Image (cartoon, rainbow, N blue to C red; front, side, top):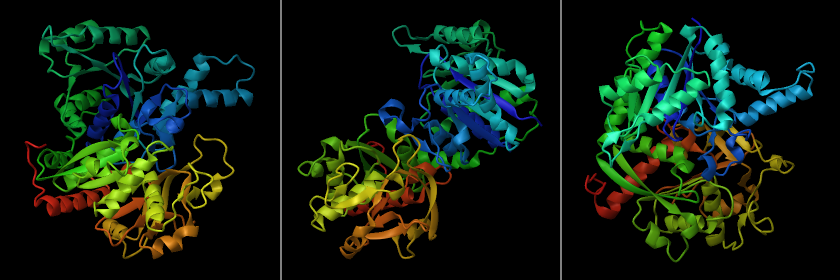
Length: 548
């Protein structure tokens, strides 16, 4: 059969959950036996989000092949359990860069290069690229931004063109909008949805299905009203009501028959019902925890939860695997110091020090690590979190008072963290870090090997600086062990303190590989260590609904 294309657009407001709707639909289609992938088209002019501050656009997600992408690709991978790639995230900047490069090469034969057809042709080529590989039955495309945004117009125009270039049975358009509830009037208002669909239709795109994000159930009368004024079939207006977990949304969409409508449109209504038993089993554990722990996430971007989205999701997965509710307490590292760290972290069952860049909050991270090390609190450091646990150990245990990373203190006489050799000639910032999946060989008797159950793993990276091996002998002699190394370069990937109940730092980003059905092993072990610590401290880790 021909590859089928689903396009998901949004209106009224951002952050309505286009990525979750796209991923939920893809999950249901995949659960019926179809080969499905999702791609995200972002309207910003950056080539990728790699140079963006997390406060601007949330976390930067990294794929196996080293692409720095939008955080929605994390949702795609977590929902589908399959890996994405560079081809799954395209920005306006990438489109224009490709077109300008072709123009410089003379590819347009002297023509005036314009948005239509040259920019839209490049957008369409990329929208169809994954489908033309022959690997997928269905390609779901999410378009970032909202209808009416200036920067989104070329993407909407490209969808308009594809709407008549592709056969009707190979194309479907889904539009997500907001139906707000006005508490003063005690009623839901459909006018924002009507205006949003009107703007989309004026651009030439006619949605086949309208998904209404709402905090209150939509009555049949409201659905009929939206269908009438938005010119869609009766029954093709569905609700996406607020859910206690994003992983509930696929079940809600199945109840609303979203996947059935799409398959009917594609002529594929002969397929079996979706097998979503594993998802239901995960949700049963998530909604019915037997234990509870409090874990501190010490970072510098804590005011925006999307900045640490994959870490927070990994705790959800690991918590369910342990029949445990994980209460994550975000702690702004900038406000932590040696004098107040006990007050801020004393009630925590475990401490995670998050990744990041720059000097702000660094001393607070170091103070948090020292507190965890000296008080036998389970500790987990990721990327910069690992680097700072080495700095803290070198300062406090080895007595190297000026131990530091040359990223922040280039003049230090004890550069325990230093710029990677192959990075020293790099001047361009975007897309030049050590990115993507790399192997790591584990010491057989290490905590890491026990956690993974193997001595060779592959995890994703995003960094320029590394542990300076000149200090390895001193560090290990003092009690911190390098237990994971890249087999080709010898780069230290994991450090542990064997005498500590649970102390591990990793250079890679394990949070990028966690899914509900395959929770990341270190997170699972870390939550288990937090449970054990809570029992030791309080006598019990039993879940108490009133506290939660």
